[in-house]
Length: 208
Image 1 (cartoon, rainbow, N blue to C red):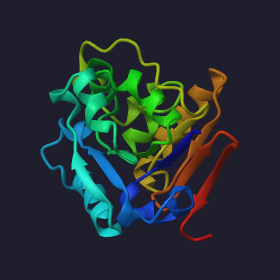
Image 2: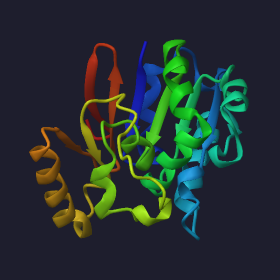
Image 3: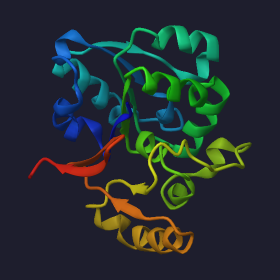
């Protein structure tokens, strides 16, 4: 059964995930993937997501996609209950996801019950395309990536950090562009996330 928690910023909204958890967080193993943050000198925004997992009681293991291969990755994820893919550059992330084989392994892991948590870029990754990130992230950070198809685990395009005024015009332009391609857009503030299961999807909000 598909269980996705696609957040704008997981460290802010992750308390809303409890309905997806089969057991208390203190009894679950989590893998934390910080790879998307590589292009940034200040990675503080990446590791607050990890700190949130620890705060909630998860047993956390770090996995860097650029330092692993498909067989090793499958072994590392075999006994993990939840994986959190943190934010950063979406283009760089997709490139490393493909090169590591994570894109092939993840669907099988979801089938066996793994819970996927995306944070910003980690959420956009699950959409039909990551092209909508081009006004926010630098595609040149993954210079050999030419195919912007996402993992297509969710059928809409997510735009995170929608509460930030500096992004307003870029969000408007991106929404128009995606709509013209026949894709529905969901904008999320950092207080929100989309929960996706086999039954459908719904937006959850800390203020609801």
